[in-house]
Image (cartoon, rainbow, N blue to C red; front, side, top):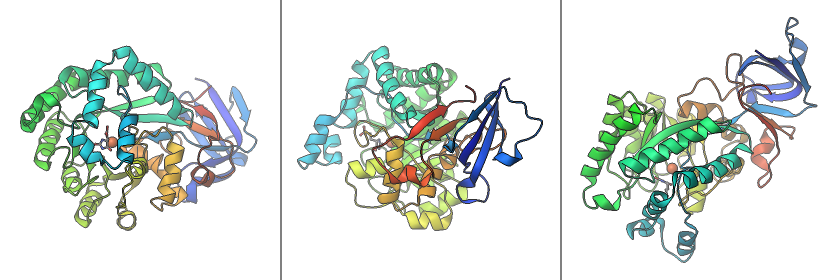
Length: 399
Ligand code: DI6
Ligand code: FE
C-alpha cells in the first residue's frame, strides 16, 4: 500500500481538545485510503518511509467536507415558481395548487435515467469542487415504486462512478403523488412495501419523511419509521420546518440520526433529541430562500449540547444551492453560529448525522478524505462568500 506524506501544513483536524483540533506546523501520513498518522511536523515517526512526500508550503488541510442533506436527483427546475413567489405566492400556496414538489415529480418521471444521472452528476461535481468528499442523496421526487427505486439507483451509480462517497436515503414520504389524492394512508402503506424491495436491492442506507402540514402527519411518519425499524434501517426526519408537528420528539423515539430544518422546534423536542443523541441538521439555504423569519432555536440547542450539522438541502424548490461554503457563511450570518461550530457542522457532526464514524475528523485509522485550501485559517472558509479557495481534494488517500 502506498504511504504518502504531506508536510508543512496548517491542519484543522476537528479532533482533540484544541479549538479546530489545530496543528500549526503539521504533517499527515496516509497509507492506502486511511490516515496512518497526523501531528506536528517535528514528531513525524522516524521509521516512516513514505514513497511520496509533498511540501504544502503552509496550505490549510481539513477533513473533506460532508453535505449530509441533499435532494440531488431530480428533473427540471423551479425558476418560474421562484418568480411566482417573488410576486407574493407562498411556498405552501404553490404546493397546494399542485405546483411545488408535484411539478418536480412530473419532470423527474419524464426524464430518462441518463438525463437524471447526468444532471445529478453535474451537481455533485459542483459540490466536490469545494472539497466535498461525502454526500447524502434522498429520493422523494419519484413517488411511485418504479421511480423512487430509479432515483435511488441513480444516486448509487453516482457513488460508484465518481470519487465520492454517496449515502442514500429513501424519502417516498416527501409529498402525496396525485394518483393517491385523498388517500394518504394508502400511499403510506405502499411506501412501506416499496421500502422492503429497495432495501433488498441494497438501495437504501436510511429512511426519511416530511412531517408537516403539506407533508405527512406524525401518525403516518410513525408507520414509515416502523417499517424502517423492521428492516434495521436508521431514520431521520424533515421536522418542524414550516410548523411544529412534534416530529423531532417522535424521531428521537426511534433514535433518529438527525432531525432537519427545525425552525419551529420546541423545548420538548430539544430534550428528546439530546436524550437520543440525534443531530440537529440546520439548513440555512432553505431558511434564506423561503425568506423564513423564525430562526431555529440555536442558543437552546447549543446549551443542551445537541450536535449541530449544516447542509445545502440542495433541491429545486426551497434551496437550489450548490455551495457548502456559502452555507457556512449563512450559518454564521443568519444563525449566528461561530465559524468553528459551522465547520464542525460540515465535518464531524455531518458524519454523525450519517451514522459514519470513519470520517469528518483527521485521526489515525479514519479515511484519508482531505480538502486542501489556499487560506491561512479555517475561519476564512466561513468568512468569504462567492469564492472557492479549494486547492485540492483528496478522496481516500493517495494520489
Ligand atoms: N422540505 C424542503 O425544504 C424540501 N423538501 C422538504 O421536505 C423542498 C422540496 C421541494 O420544494 O422540492
Ligand atoms: Fe430537505
